[in-house]
Image (cartoon, rainbow, N blue to C red; front, side, top):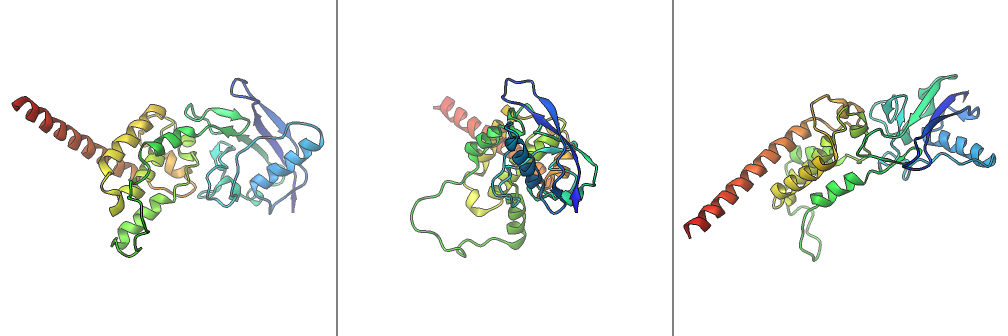
Length: 262
């Protein structure tokens, strides 16, 4: 079935440009197309007319890479829950619908061009501690480290985060706690992540707070997350952060007392 739509797409030529909405009337949209395929059709028409195509991020188009994020009718990734933009199909819209498409709206994600935003703040959080230090050498046997099924399942749930930024775009505070807590949990829950658990938590949370707002439990992040990451991970992150700070203060106090006594 072919759909006729009215598209209102945010166009912004550069970070310095104020930006504006432009209207398009694609009339060759099939209901089996994905949302990105629909934008491809619009871009093909624009290129044929000698006009600048709409810039938008995309890569795998399989709901894994997290690059396809955009706000569709005021909802990050669009109206269908637990779905990325690339997996949102046009059958979720009706013939004659008006669809408004915008980039993520957050100070921490400045617009680069059109629907493309700079999400390097997430990269800085990962660089601060989103890894484990492991000695080089041959690979360890996969069954050598025993992990309970509940723990493995919980870590896997956290690792499902694709870092798209929908949580930040949906949050009234522009908070990055859901992303950060997911990245912390999938490492802090596993035995391999324990040696650096406390230093990792402090480093990643402190870096997050440089770029993102504070969490006040609106819950919009969980509602918008295409992978259904739970708010429970934020609670786990907060507990670990408090424990890490307590351990850090206790260690510093011990060292200071020793130095003073010496």
